[in-house]
Image 1 (cartoon, protein in one colour):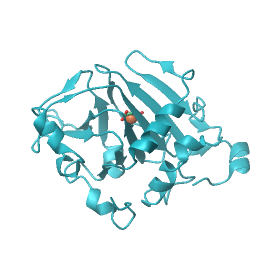
Image 2: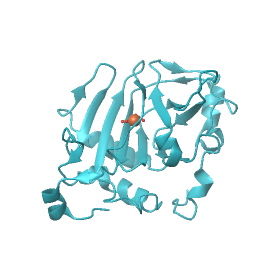
Image 3: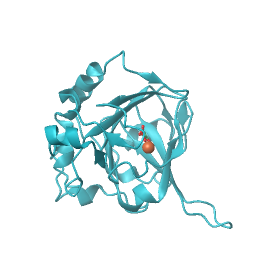
Image 4: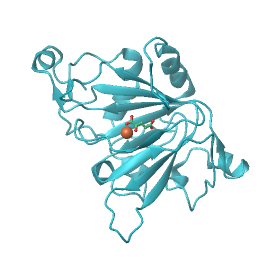
Length: 235
Ligand SMILES: O=C(O)CCC(=O)C(=O)O
Ligand SMILES: [Fe+2]
């Protein structure tokens, strides 16, 4: 596959959710995926009730400030450069300076939530190891109206970009199931962009989950003055 650039990103735009979500299958290779997975430190996991988490370089302070430190090379190279080539972080204050690593066993997930104002409103999610469905729901509801819902399939090695009103006006979550069902062209908003939709068809429209790891790359808006002097604008 040709590398995706700012000029070709529009081809990967998901039509249906609110502006703007992009899905790029095969964003990294199997070798690159293995290298990341093998480098994740085994002793830095925080166990949460429904998943495990690592925060790099460090957790934000209580007022959402990042004490900046470089991300490890195995997280940035080649992924961060490839995301930078898409142009979506061009207007961001620092460029990608933060990454959450989430791991979900089958049956685990994350409650619907929004990522909030601590970050520049773009998140770049790289999925590893297993396919999972992200449920996106509209935030603004009227009493007589059911919230809008969209299902986004995330295959291993794919990139999902969430920006614009998709970042600000929706919630996202992952259901706590061992299998995602009814995955079809009419139920999955990024169906035509999937790398291997045939696999789901052959599997009876189902995805039996394995352990899935996600890398969510962001730009934390507030960086402590001292650390930004030392590290400058990192891209
Ligand atoms: O694992 C994912 O794809 C979602 C993670 C997430 O929503 C978050 O870290 O805020
Ligand atoms: Fe999130």
